[in-house]
Image (cartoon, rainbow, N blue to C red; front, top):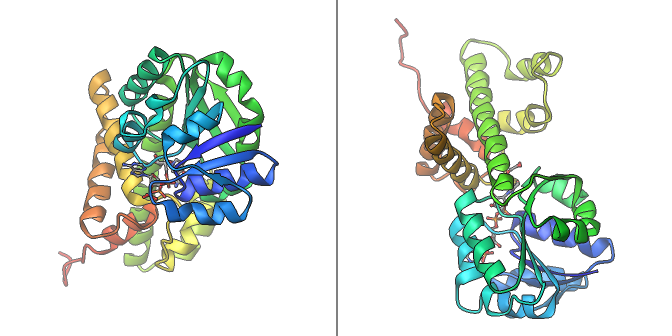
Length: 294
Ligand SMILES: NC(=O)C1=CN([C@@H]2O[C@H](COP(=O)(O)OP(=O)(O)OC[C@H]3O[C@@H](n4cnc5c(N)ncnc54)[C@H](OP(=O)(O)O)[C@@H]3O)[C@@H](O)[C@H]2O)C=CC1
Ligand SMILES: O=CC(=O)O
């Protein structure tokens, strides 16, 4: 199967490498073209624009940073709309809001193309290992046609019906994840400031009912102050913002998520946006206790 791939950031690079490893023919494009070089060394072809990719490939997958990037690649100069036609499929894996996804869907179908949104849950390592959870919505026939690729990319794909449902599911999941990361960070700092060993806290958590892979994986590195980016904090804050907007639309009160969003914004203002989202821990730690606690 031949696929196009747009966006070779942390996730796009890992996913397209994985597709190449599994024998897919992959034509890549990235805004910063030099990021294509490593993929070419592993057998990918390069095209000069999103339009050129979609002209060449029946199926094109995109993995871009945010709504404005997702829209730019479709509607911009040399974008997808210039060559999408005649049954070609466009699969957008970027985490965006439902409105963005719907705009893309409408424009593509108007041109005779087909659309599937397919945001993913799981980070850099699951992307490298083909262990993502894929949250698709849109044209079901396209979903079924591209299952061979989805089965390489992920350990499980959900088909959630109409366009927008994949985006919404992803935002709900990441709203929960971002809130958990904040509670975890506060717990680690609270343990340390209370004279407890945060490493022992990790052991206690891991044996109880709230044990989870995120605490297990990120905790030891966080305690070491290491936040090498797997899921950049700026993207987690974007997801909190989009989830809160969904909460506005649906009149769901989310004070916990709102507080978590503020914490991620503060971390961004401290210059931590390019680090892993676990770096929110540094912004919690940065609040010095008064010299004497009354
Ligand atoms: N990292 C993770 O763990 C996960 C991320 N996600 C989501 O996946 C998406 C990608 O994440 P990730 O790979 O980490 O992000 P990165 O920041 O590593 O990569 C972003 C990609 O988007 C491209 N891009 C940004 N702006 C534009 C634009 N205006 N026009 C064209 N291309 C653009 C970048 O190109 P360039 O190289 O030129 O900057 C790059 O290829 C995001 O929506 C994120 O929320 C979902 C699950 C997990
Ligand atoms: O969106 C991030 C993730 O880890 O999932």
